[in-house]
Structure formats: structure tokens, C-alpha cells
Length: 195
Ligand SMILES: CC(C)(COP(=O)(O)OP(=O)(O)OC[C@H]1O[C@@H](n2cnc3c(N)ncnc32)[C@H](O)[C@@H]1OP(=O)(O)O)[C@@H](O)C(=O)NCCC(=O)NCCS
Image (cartoon, rainbow, N blue to C red; front, side, top):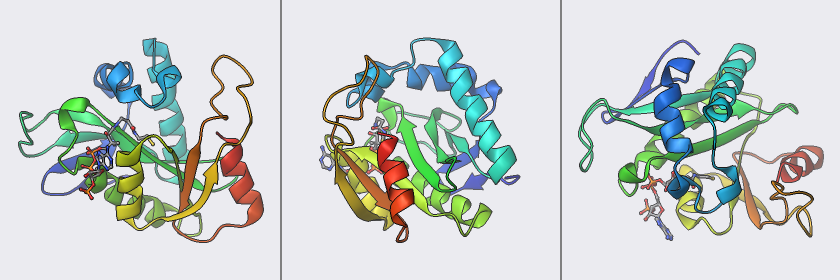
């Protein structure tokens, strides 16, 4: 992935450790994890590892997660504001995992939908044969709506385990799995198992 992605309002550039402060601000904010409190980053190291995983996805598969920065004012936020991340990472079984997380100040302006659409196109361009998948908690209707508006299809809904298997395990929570194309059962089961 060499080119930045943009719309009139947004600039998406591959995450690097230069984004660590801004990224950690969003990922350590409890409001951005209200649907999954155990996922909150409680240390800068966790955020650094997430960025490094994204950089690895870029190296191996041509795309990863991006910093989402405003090019135009949105609500109270000015141009140049870092508002979160969006992108896709390559899963070990050869499918993309699409995702996004935005600062609360940026919610409700269509930014997730716009950033996710750019990310979907970029993932398909980088690896056209890899299915794009996305997982979302059933209690997160705004995120479900973003995936529906992208045109992804709901292919599974449920919980991948009956009970938590450890303090940080969230496989018992109800999730929805979306894909951009039909996937074989092995791929679907592997996505479900991610929780
Ligand atoms: C979920 C999230 C990405 C949405 O960002 P956003 O920029 O506000 O999303 P958009 O404005 O592009 O679209 C949200 C859609 O959900 C709808 N929506 C918002 N709240 C809703 C609710 N409670 N119930 C149903 N729909 C809702 C909006 O109306 C909009 O749909 P529309 O375009 O048809 O009107 C953002 O709230 C966020 O980052 N949350 C925390 C992290 C997170 O949940 N990430 C996703 C993990 S899978």
C-alpha cells in the first residue's frame, strides 16, 4: 500500500508508530469500547502492538489499518484532526478482517461509512481474491448499519462459545459476521472462532 486514500473530507494513511499518541488516545477511551469494555487498551504498549500488526499486514498483504484524518471541518473538529482508524488486516487463513474505531467527537457524521468504503476498495485492490469479512457485536447497531450500507452480506449470527473461557474471552457474546462474497465453511468457521 503506497498511496494515501482520500475523499473530500478524509485522508487515510497507513498507521505507523508516529500515530501512537493519537491512536492510543482513541483506543484507551472507554467510550470507544462501550460495547466491549475488555477490549480497551490500558497501556501504550498494547496500542503499539496493534499498530505493528497493521504494519505487518501492509508488508505481507499490501493493506492494513489507516489513520483517519480530517481534510475539512466536521462538527467541532477542524482539518488535520486525527479521528480514529479504519482499514483491514489479513487473517492467517487468507481473508481480510475489516474494522474501524473512531473518537466519540467524530461519531454521527458518516465518517465510519466513508472510511470503511475506502478501506473495502483498498483491500480488494490489494488482494482481489481474498474475501473481506467483518465481525460486529449484536449490541452495536451503528456498526452493523455501517456494514449493511457498505453492501456486505450478513452470513452468520450467534455466539461462538457458551461461556467465557477466561477473563478476556468474549467468544460468548452475540456477534454478526458479514462478508463481501460467499465464503467456504472452513473460512466461515475460522472467522466465527475469532469471537
Ligand atoms: C460504530 C462507529 C464506527 C460508527 O461511526 P459513525 O461515523 O458515527 O458511523 P456513520 O455515521 O458512518 O454511520 C452510522 C450509521 O448507524 C446509524 N446509527 C447510529 N446509532 C444507531 C443506533 N443506536 N441504532 C441504529 N442505527 C444507528 C446511523 O444513523 C448511521 O446510519 P445511516 O447512515 O443509515 O443514517 C463509531 O460509533 C465508533 O467508532 N464506535 C466505537 C468503536 C466501534 O464500535 N467500532 C466498531 C467495532 S465493530
